[in-house]
Image (cartoon, rainbow, N blue to C red):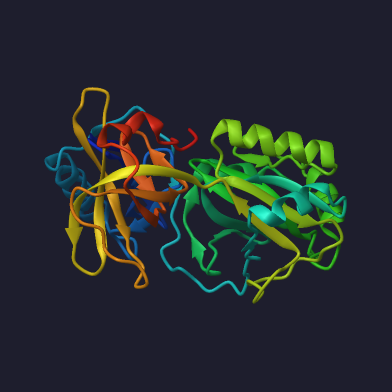
Length: 349
């Protein structure tokens, strides 16, 4: 019996979603797996069969799954990339290092200090991949997860065993650290030493090495280019630091800085539980809803029709402000200043 797989997409207003389904052979029988999420992002994975079943049963499950999605408006896409699904979500005992933020005042210190290097803060899902007797993708919670087949295949082509840390965007893993090599734990080596060893793996294709800026001039250039490109932010790492799993209570040897923006938006609705709906005006003069923002307990809830200032990370194409924070009510600007074209859009993957 021939395995099958299909990629479906759904696009409507602010939605741009992908759903992948596959009918695969395993141990002489068959399983039905799926992956889904926003187009261009690394997808969440799962299965409709917890254990292999006969082909006829698996085929019915697969056909029913595809039919249920097409009935909701999903249509076939030309993208035929495949996913390796890990249905067990096993605890691996492997955890990643998490970063505390820095503010605008601290930024210059990290740029000028030669004891710190810098990299782009990639905007995806944290993923480690461990290659030993088997290849396992691991999320930030330390659980085994599914991953694009292109990543797993790229890992398989590299000779030594290793444990790498990176950020998954779409079908690509952007790798920035090496934690083990040829069965040896190297987390206690300095970051620069680990990065030099990481370069020897010759990453390519679905595995991409995140470039490193080590001097003040190169860090300044990187910072400027990332801002101009609409990137999420920049990460600073102490050259001599070891890899420490978890997040320190404060400070730390790896820090992050996000490029937040501000925008003036209209309050289109006052919701329950201290939040308001936000809208802007597009080029045709139509009102476009761009999400909700929570109002902190120490601030008054704005009224419908008010103009408010919010801080945010970026906006998705067509609207939908990401990570908004309410700053204040604006009485010094007019509604026509709350326009869609002023929003900083998410960097294209």
